[in-house]
Length: 110
Image (cartoon, rainbow, N blue to C red):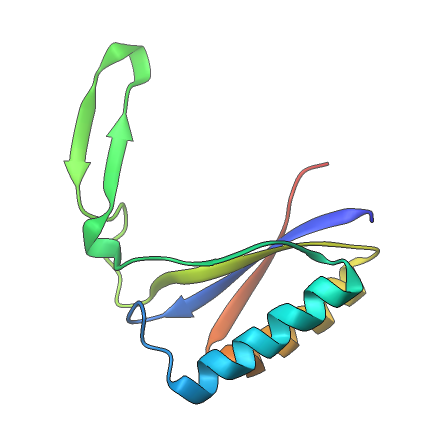
């Protein structure tokens, strides 16, 4: 396609989608697949289950819990491959509507 973007779902819980939201997300994912835009779409488990790994200079440090202890976290994401930033932005608006959450749009390095 052209340009890859990460669309991150911002939520204060993980796995909080209602049946209606999950149906809308499935329909959104199906549309991305049909257009050939979808690279990957996944939900994430509660950030409390995260581990921060630091092996700089062989430190071998594991810290249990999320890196940032915020009320809002990333609860899922899409990676899309689209022809332009304008299309990515339009998809981010559609994603926000489908999941009923705020999303963040970020471009990958080429």
